[in-house]
Length: 381
Ligand code: PLP
Image (cartoon, rainbow, N blue to C red; front, side, top):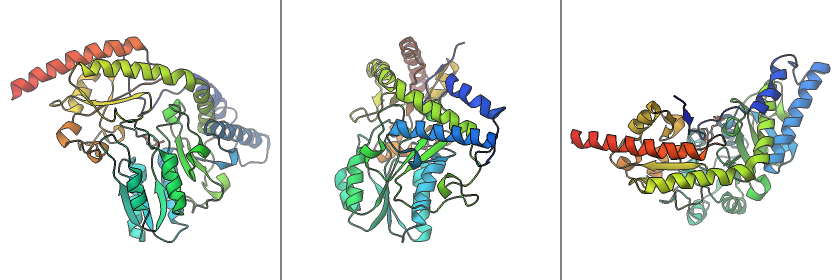
């Protein structure tokens, strides 16, 4: 059975070109980028080239790119690192942040900070009036994700950044799920810091970056040899960084072609869904082109995902990162979705390898699977 992968918001296949660029740094070019000899210089040059490639994709300066082990580390590095430089105040995050933003923000309460969550509406977007209300209290930092990992809904980060700046707060965005799907421009977003991850854009796992306004000082998470401008000690993951750089370059070259193709497939899928009695979450809001988050009332998302997997289609239920838990998605609950509908949530996230025929085939399988599960549920009742 050929399997079809529809879970690109969880992770993506490593691009062959990224792999080819990485291999020499896993074999003969094994130098430490901090060493002064020829091997070290080769590694240093490769890291710096990748820094240019990452910076170019987001319109930043290479010196603003701090390499990390991925999105989780970058988000923690900003939130904890910023808190380490300021007097405790309010830390404002949206109610739908990934746990690697939500949890560090929450944990700052122990250090005297006041965590505050910005509510989202039924469409999955935050309301600028709520931001203004929150910022009436003295605020040290604000973090709002650019695109949500479950719904794909895009926030007006530039507008929030303007409000945050007016309140003299530092503004961060987690752009992990937006990169490679829409244009991401560090300066246009007007943020002080931005999180990126390689494995969501066909790069390797375990590489990412924090893009940082040079006027911002962070307390490093890791102390040691002072790598990455003193912000991230530890011998650089040269192969991972090289792969990340190439993945960024490819993402930039392909965005104009890939985004409309994915949007067309997603729209075909959702037209098919509408005839089956499904709900689509966040469909009224601007979304990244590859994501569709839906539910069939009365059918558990987990059950549907297992049945679809047996039929050769790989999707996620709820948030992929917490798919071991059966709690309904916190993002959907924040959007005011009733828990019984939220439990039905299934996410389709397309990638550049997917083809329209796969979506057509999937719609047939989905329709048959849903009909079968409905019959079983009817018997059970
Ligand atoms: N932020 C968002 C929005 C994500 O979707 C993810 C991964 O699922 C992360 C951060 C974490 O990134 P990483 O897997 O590179 O740690």
